[in-house]
Length: 337
Image (cartoon, rainbow, N blue to C red; front, side, top):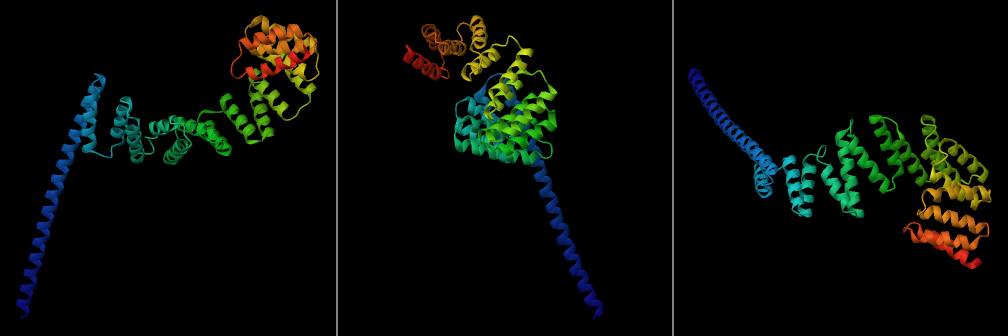
């Protein structure tokens, strides 16, 4: 009895083992078959990609599009294929289709496929598209941490500026400086962010920090004068700042013009202002800004006819940005006449 039971148990075990080996054999066969299919698909994919490159080099864009669509059918989530398809559709002026393909490429690989999608969104120049572009860049930034690309950070910086997210501007500039060092661009971005953020003292501190690196930088010296003026500095302090700039750049026409206008409008030496302004129009006789300054200084000295001549000439060469102030000055002189 016991012996028979053992035989039955042994027979049952043999059947279980047989089923196990049968299932294992089927699994190995299926795996080998799928692997063979996978290898074949990869070979086809590589072939179509090679043919696509050849078609693009020969400018057979219709053929390239068909080949890329074959690639997409073989591997629907390949980010490079999706991006390349987007490039061709964009060249064929199917912008919406291109944008959708670049979105799919980004979703497949947010670390690497952010550029075309975010760039296309920003080119649409709507509030909604800029917000989406910002989301894309922030997602790519998180995917690239801890070593984000400099190009990505600079794109983020521009978008944060356009969205007036000043705290994020400063933080992003810190990251850029960590990658490539502190320079005039980083100083300018910081001072601009602080100025527009309503923190003039911090903006002034950024200017002074850069001037320690480059004490004779005329542009940053002028930024300093502008910032002091916004902060309500007294005219005498601004005059002193301009004198320092003129020691470095005595023939800088922009400096001469700005200093002359400041003297004229803040009770300074009108004769000195006239001499400096005259130098600017002698060098650039058709510059509407310099002509306007000179005409206004003549008006302040009571030379209305001569002032009207130069102001009318300024209006002749005025741009959209300058004509309003020139019109205002002409109206003031008309009242005197």
